Amino acid sequence: MKVTTTKEKILNAVLLAERITGKKESLPVLSCVLLEVGGDLLVRATNLEAGIEIHVPCEIEDKGVVAVSAVVLSQTLRSISGEKITLKTEEGNLVIESRGTKTLIKSIPSEEFPKLGEADEKNGVSVSRPELMRGIQSVSYAASPSMIRPELGSVYVSIKPGAIVCVATDSFRLAEKKISDVTGKQSTELLIPLKHALELSHVLERVEDDEIRLSADDSQMCVAAGGVRYISRVVDGTFPNYKEIMPKTFSTEATILKNDFAEMLRKARVFSGNDQHVGLHVYPKRKIFSATARSAEVGEMSDLIETAVSGEDLDINFHIGYLADCLPTIESDSIILGFAGAGKPLVVRGVSDPSFTYLVMPLNR
Image 1 (cartoon, rainbow, N blue to C red):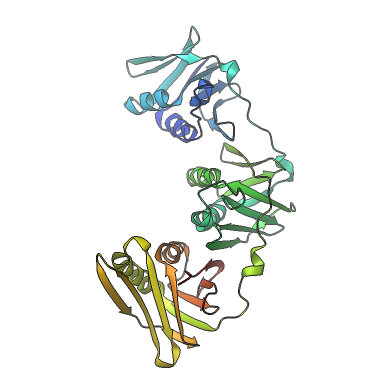
Image 2: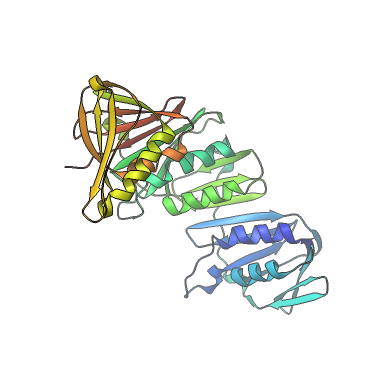
């Protein structure tokens, strides 16, 4: 094997692949990246649950394959100052040359490297890369960090002709993001484990193409674009029928500037102590919308902000983090808080962003 490429292209590919490597001592090859030269240079990595394959433009002199430690390779490439880099194999090991420097990295038998799964990409759908990335990022924080209940530790993706819906919930709050501008006839539902959903978002941020191809079957999904192919297992489970818990009517509503609400919550967080509880007090007849928080160690606060309110008077408590988490993802300067009543969910929407809906359960006190 012998190829010449630029430092930027090979380093970017290796750094992307390094995140997907595994750390099982019983299978040291999982901590490696596989460099395979055929028609072009392919950089591969897998942790058995997810895998990635990246095409790197290069000048090819000899074909071949080698597996080396991802950490050692990325650190070596970072330390090289030259723009052009030559990768070749000598006695089965990888040799890197650039501007008078020469580094040899010991290899691991490439035959041990697991094969990446194949997905039926013909039956997939084409979707805007920025839109899918935004969809995952808009909901992933609402998924459970635990996989005790796999369906709650995953991001649910529903693909229908012309639309994709991303949803996540940990049973205390729920986020839903709708994506339009989707081409393709495939209809399917996926449960992507949270860890892999975050990795997919990271990959999508670094792909240059504006359109990607997404395909899936019962056990895995594949996203391909810009010379990058990312494969992940999917969860075999059923996502909760969340439409049933969405309130149909609201007893109290408040329209508020998003930044004002975020600032109110930041102040409340200081005074809420370890509990991180905040009380919201809505009195439409007196045109009052306020927040209170207190802790024995710090003190207490009460903050009143200007809001358009309607409906019934309400005093209700929430976890501050659950209220604040959704705000950065709402693409609107003003938000609508829809209260279904005491002890019932709050729904947060952007005034000019109908694609996003966030539901949060109140505290029982």
